[in-house]
Length: 466
Image (cartoon, rainbow, N blue to C red; front, side, top):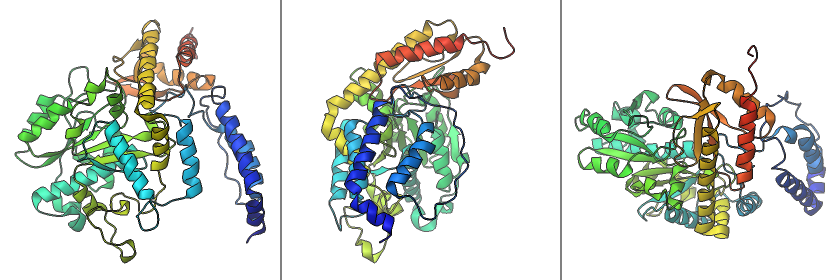
């Protein structure tokens, strides 16, 4: 054994204790470190020849890299839709690395059964019926990819061909209809060989991001019976708008289409009694995407996909090899996901659900919704800003009242303050900012700090103005 490896093994309890102590200090300082910062780019250092052992690597990381990392797990990181890591999920993640399981099959451990149990818990959490079977993937992009891959196979089934065997060209032109498709939908279609141009955006309701059901019906009618894919939204990224899922599902009585629902974070509305109606009809979907490193507050990366057609899923993702055993009636995960080898992503999710249950996670969701509404009220009362949409769930979408073109400057000023991090967007043609609440640590005091930061940033005149 290499001398450094031998020494690290001998000192492993001591070195892990040092690592734990550093992690505890980082967690304790999350509320005080800059939420985000403009990174100072480092040129890659030469590959170490001899190495410095774990202690040396820890010292180098602490000095060279850790100061430039964001406080993304902290309470005022409101960019994108980013959760944190609950104490239980963090413990689960550490054990995931320690046990280093590959839940590809059930040939050597019961790790796949833990994943199945976690899938069942999540299915219940989101109000899905047992007909929806699921698997863990890396994030919403791969969840959407998996759902659309199954949809692609369904299109082939309608035409009497197997795309998994003959390729996407066997389908001919494919029609994907959606009101406000997330960018990951186009990426997934590109990877699936269907092409971004397959997307046909359908008219939305006035002043909304939700699809106009009547316009969708007309679009389906124009296909003259050709099977299609409809991508519905349960929570758009800019304004958290929801399509009428029940009305969309009802259209299948007249038109042949696969209903995929992108519920990356909107599915968690099911945990709030005042907002659960927004997810009515989610169970009617043929496939569903939910991102867990958002509102479940588990470490990156983690998402889940659900579908009613596991038979088609196995047809797409099966990995035939003698050493993996037969496909069988209850396929191992190696036959159900894009990856053959993967982390046991289910373990952090299992830990947080076991530790805090439905009620604990419902409290996080309800609190974040209330905090988003509070920030919306504070922003609406500031003359410098205007809301661009109602605060429907957990995202506040707003802009500068008199100079939306300055949103980029404003974003930089907020980031440089170290007090908060918000991300830019464009909504209805207007440059805007989004504040997305999904972290379990966020409190009213954090909302007040963000509001005061917005007040201070809005009062700073841009260069060249007075």
